[in-house]
Length: 410
Image 1 (cartoon, rainbow, N blue to C red):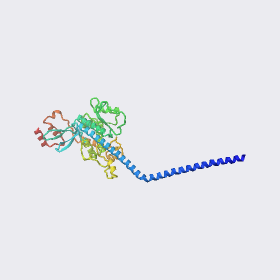
Image 2: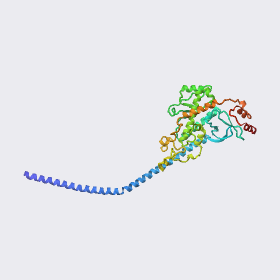
Image 3: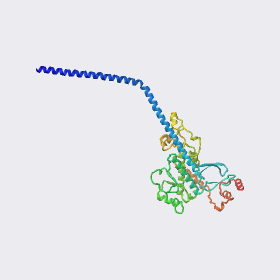
Image 4: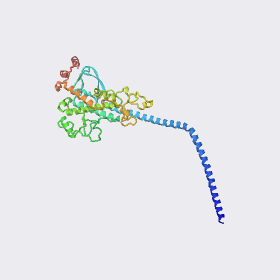
């Protein structure tokens, strides 16, 4: 009985094992067919993959190119908008050029802003053109009044701030234009600029009694080590002896202003007028060339370098520069902080403003030492005696025949 039970149990186990084996065979056959189908699918995909890959790459390249074209179009419109706003600001401020005759009778270009002559910084001691005769256009040199010099520096500083704002360029030396808290323009050294701290100004710009010395005491009291004035309340040549400290700060201030203009010109692809310190002193000319000139420099060039190493047409098309408003501090495509953007000022020998300050201060000191300054009384300057008064005190001398001719034609 027991042996019969063992045989039946064994047969049952054998039957179960046979059923499991049959199931595994069916599963193996099913998986083999699935793998065969997958293998066939893979082979078919591999046959068509190169063509599909080429199609996908072409589609993505076209999509990227369309994106780049849109980016270039936006960058071009932004550039044109920046340039338009900067030029409009210059136009509204009355920045213009006019040919005038100097004391030798030669016609020279003079630059004006708001109807006021913009002097060369080397001649701020005594530079103001006045027409003696509208017929013969004889020009004589008069002393520029302090309020005229302050006015023109205020106009230039304000226009420069507007232009840099519209061009989205941060100047290396921060300018503070007249505002509610302080009525006169000032400029900060690069080390003190954009420190995000409250800028301290003299309590009274001219002090009690309108004396620069009082203003200097206010400045020292407030520790304005980085603030430089762009204003005077008496003739520049008189400040040398009366308040040399204020004179030095003022000369440094106007030098920083000229340096800012030259730096802005270079970042916009205009290197003309920035190669020598004498050219940098012509702030009116540089401003006019930057904002008003319609020269060929506004056509596209290849790169900030001299385009001698043209790697590809696409690269040179993307790096087209030399236009007003092209490279800025708020553009992702043409950013001044990139390697290419820094090419504009890399190697510029006046990257340190101290070189300009020293040359201007030296030139003005030599000019003051070589002349005997004489202040004319108002009674000496009448309708017919202006030429005689000036000719009598001029150390350079004017053409006497032309002066007589001008007087007789009045």
